[in-house]
Length: 323
Image (cartoon, rainbow, N blue to C red; front, side, top):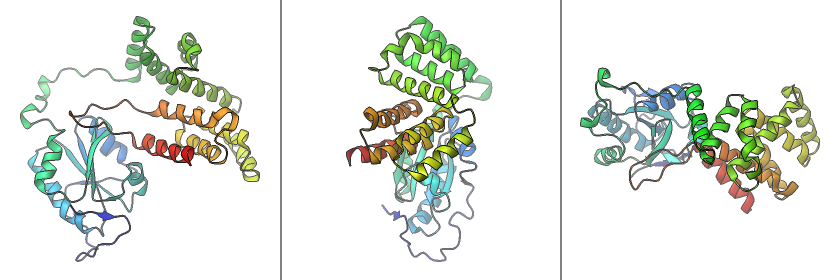
């Protein structure tokens, strides 16, 4: 299996020529990733090929992937991402060598492989996840009406689940989380009140408590931009002003800007892990709980993949806490 480590140039003939010049594959960038990959994978599996112009094995794998795509007759969609030009996407998926292929289904990565596999191995990889040709969805006229997945419909379904079984902590967590995501603070507080006493012992409810606290803290700063500038000035003068840094993290949380919030909390943890009863660590863990999507179903024997952002920040937290 051939692969290239990032930054290790492989001499290839006429390397300035695009290796997929005649391909029908779609070039994906950060600008069209949501549409061409995430949204598209909700109906058709999407195979992402991370490559670079200087990578010799990428030029070997590319034509194989194109050939297999044609042979599979629409059972999956093939896209390519230039890992040099789209380093943010490469980092999000934890790409360390190329070529690397990631299979997306229902908006989530389900499996992947690295290196220039032969055609048979590529087909073997795909066949673990794709339905056989004879099991493809029926013709359009035979397709049942899809379930309403709008936020309002999902909220109604979760509300009904909580009403039917008030002890279903998972349904209540999902219900409150969705209410907060859509700014329905009063309804979220009402749904949280019956389980607020569980927050110290149930991680899901502790996460919601931290989020509600952040929203209340953010409400104390109605002009978020001005407040952030003030906290930034305090931190420029004193990087160990943990009160200011935590308040800044709460503003980010109240706006659902999760990555900047976790970055600020990591700054506290790197300087004082035990600050304020480990409040930074507990809040960081709560954010991971809030943003982690449900695990996707995979084939028997396969391990459901982690969300790239959650996986990255879980590793960063472990690195800081254990250092």
